[in-house]
Length: 322
Image (cartoon, rainbow, N blue to C red; front, side):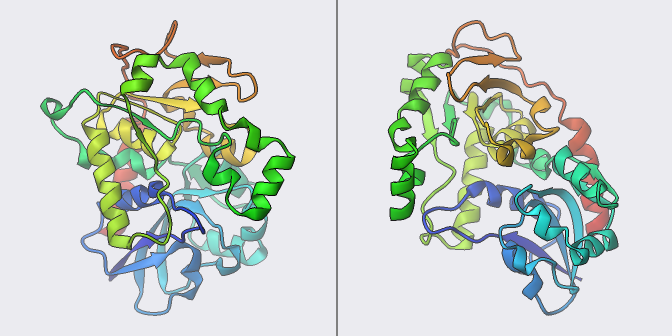
């Protein structure tokens, strides 16, 4: 039996390394990767039967849903976004998912959406919680604090000025005049010393620049950095969840105010030390006793709730592959 691994389409300006991190989580269970399969074109596959762990966000290209019958899928850590659900849950889509149930879902929203259509589904959490295979000895941990795409849902140049149409739209709706909001809100709960000395990381590099091999190498390099970090502050779940697996102290900054984003987090947010930011006012609350601001000597102890999800995920994947 052959084994496949998911790859991903880019948009016109950038791609999300977090997708590749999710694929690395699946890859660690495979004896080898025979074929890279694009998530947006699974319906086009034709060839030898191939096993594929179907974790992550599905799907941007609903026209190519459902996957080929030549793909033997394991639905685990599967997220169906509310924007794609109406098209994916056609009569054909429901029949396909029922054929491969039970469906393990990354978030409770997806599980509830599928169950409402009569599909056997349950919450599993995200497969990146199993990335402790990248964990290092404590002696290798340094003093670097990484701030990874904080409050990335806020207006930012690469989104505001994506193309001429978007630029005009964002000027008219006022978003173009809010480019300083992220920095302003971060200052409310992160000290100047941390902001001045931390390493800022962007998990959305430019598109049409890297090969798939380079993207996976980039994802592995990031995991290596996070594994050795003193602290990570991020709004990326595919930075925060791997940090839990790596034993790296992590704070998740939640400033999302749209259902498209928040539905992805249902059942996941409870795993984190978290700062919840009001996107309009910048006021915030937290669940780990932060009194003032995050300082260089702020001690963060992860909640360690993720093990109850990670261990069953490992067993499911090993059973599927073996």
